[in-house]
Length: 262
Image (tube, rainbow, N blue to C red; front, side, top):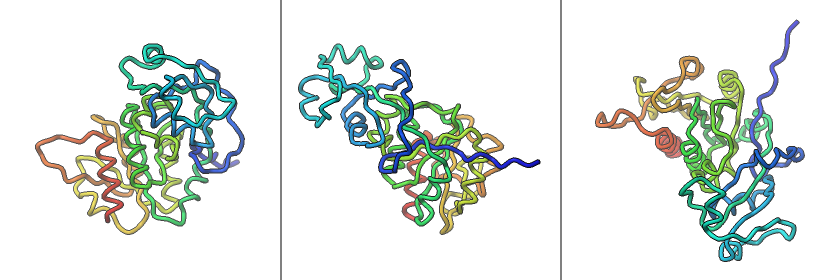
């Protein structure tokens, strides 16, 4: 007897038809976003459920809030107690529901008629890096990013702040098996290029005219061996020998620019 693999799931971004709201995660598990860009982007996303907003009178006066939105007026000191120490809340904090999921196949199908790149992250766990990569993905119109479900940060205020609104617009695919996801990505017509410092060729030399999937590993450890084995080619960025490596979010931004400029 044979079994067909289950489709892989991915977060549903803004501007896509919903299949229905995800059940409430409960107050304790709802992320809190802070800062003007993350909060206003969450409010503008029709696929995001915002449960409650805290803010100063000045900050709230600039928002066009739904009549039924629960609002709590607070001073800066009170808002500071809702977020991590020294977090720049800019007078706004919002409690939200995580975005719902969709199938990876649907995401790949959505981009089948264009040449937008895809980013795959292998055990990149720092929320600042993931947020910054989402921001670069939005800037260079990437199809989305793919991470593991267990070895990646959850949606959080830190991710949202670092993404500066891109968390609401860039699809973020979470998969259980990254190797199987890379196989599915290849079947969709992507050329998978793993970035690593020990490669013999540069990214420019590895890129052709096909759709590009950039694969990056965690800082320090890099990609796991099995992840490298599921790449079509390995490549490096032409950096000076004065530095050993780049921050993964910087490397992602440079790679996305290279794909856009080829």
